[in-house]
Each structure stands twice: as structure tokens, then as C-alpha cells.
Image (cartoon, rainbow, N blue to C red; front, side, top):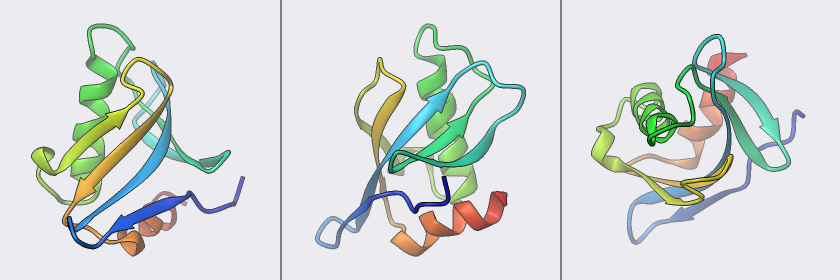
Amino acid sequence: MSVLPEIAENAAAGAVSFSVRVQPRASKDEIAGVIEGALKIRLQAPAVENRANEALVEFLAHLLKTPKSAVRILGGERRRIKRVEIRGITKQQVFGLLAHDA
């Protein structure tokens, strides 16, 4: 599980995109490593009424010290594995999340 997540950098848009695997109804909000090329994120929010997606956006924005408006779910809104895009950050900041939680 120590493999790095696959991160795409879009220099023109000043954004990075990567996959996350969300585990709703966890005991606490945390990054739990990398699984199958996706960043595993455990969230307290349940997967009902879009609450887990909102919690995911808030959690990533908080960790990366970026506005919530810079975080966007590109796909997989109703699935555990989602593709997210975050504007105004670098790949290194995303890799830093893994070190931050370790």
C-alpha cells in the first residue's frame, strides 16, 4: 500500500487531478494511505444526500489550505472511487498529504 497515487498535472489550468477512494462512516477524517493507485480517505460523514462528497471537498481544502471552490469532483460522485481536481496546488503538495498523515 505504499505506492504513490497516480496524479495528473494540468499546468495550463494550474491544477492537479487524482483518484481518491472514500470510506464513509469512519471513526475520524483521515488519509489512510494509497490503495490501487488512489488516495484512500476515511470520512466520518455518511454516504447519503451528498454528505460524504461535501466532507471530502472540505477535508481536502482544509488539508491543502486552499478554498473549497478550488476542489472539484470530476467523476464518481455516487461511487467510492472518485476523481478530484484541485486548482492552485502542485503534485508535491498532494504527495505531502501522505507524509502529513504518516
